[in-house]
Image (cartoon, rainbow, N blue to C red; front, side):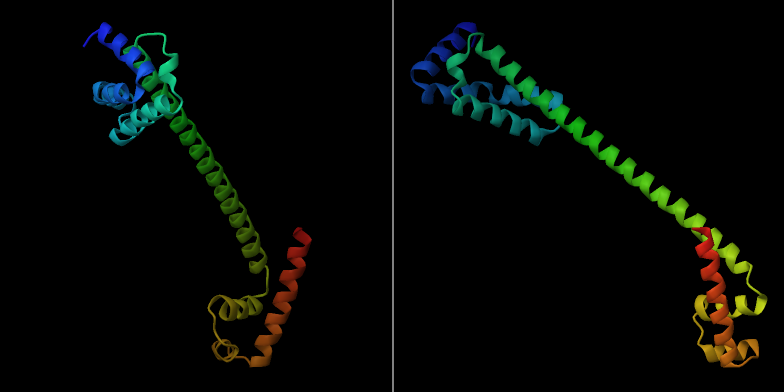
Length: 179
């Protein structure tokens, strides 16, 4: 089929659209899918875009306003649709990268902040007298019961409680002075 066949088809679209539309679809569907696939590199998306183009032509009766060659109109239409899809994908990809980057920055900030807090806490812990530090480690870090910690240190349960009470008071004062 040549240019004259397309002119005739365009005239038929304007006069008896249903039959001519089916012929238009059969004639250009596969060719337009190839055009779309060449740009999108995605078979399903290419088919979707061609189907959407044909639906738009029918629903909006765009065939009534075609002033150029039918072939050129369809090829330009599918090209524009594909370029819009690619632009949308590019924007979505950029937005996703920006989001991931912002998340990474936030995570890194939180890690740095947590590391700084841990370092300050460990420095304050290391300032505790040995017996208080050992009591603190046994009960809070090693999760030992007061009795177990007292036996291991060779002191009474009340002494463990006293060491922990003073350790907590010192830690609280030091942390308050940091803020």
